[in-house]
Length: 205
Image 1 (cartoon, one colour):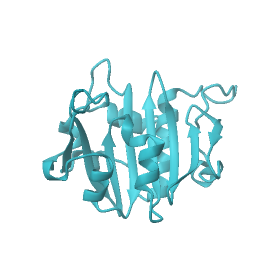
Image 2 (cartoon, rainbow, N blue to C red; image 1 turned 180 degrees about the vertical axis):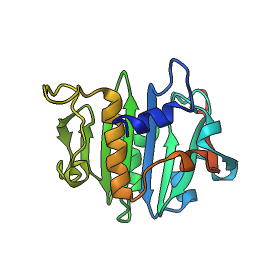
Image 3 (spheres, rainbow, N blue to C red; image 1 turned 90 degrees about the vertical axis):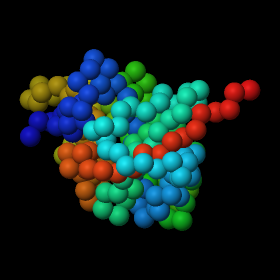
Image 4 (cartoon, rainbow, N blue to C red; image 1 turned 45 degrees about the horizontal axis):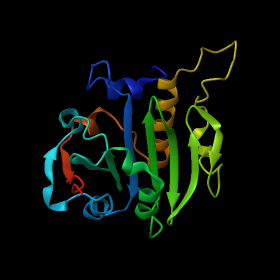
């Protein structure tokens, strides 16, 4: 299996030149979908059947246009794909209240590339998936058991192994999340029917 297979799987739904320049997703354990939607400023009454394969990229998160949340269950976790607001610390702290495990990936090829873990309204671990030596949180090493055998750091120079590309780092982060959740994101989930919710645009001043 290619080292970047999950990156390529997601990219296969958009073959354009800008495909996978940005990707933001959050996994929250045992949260009612409506609560997750409201926490992320979505309108729970706007829910409509949809799938990742037909959803599109949503908004850029600027607030000047309506955004979207794609929400579906994966095991006993809610998986939310949205814009960067969903993976900011403030959102994760709210989603992780009441002891809920919360995981997030922020992938902006020209900006933040982070894997985050929150629980009980606190960031436990935040690490840069292109350089896992850059990490913070109450327990920066809490995710290490799930990182075993995965390759992340693009600046590592191992003459006995192929160079690590960013798309492999991204796949490694998704694999680590899947290990913790107990289910990997896969084509079946991406093509299944979930629900899209509108995040209304900001009111103009």
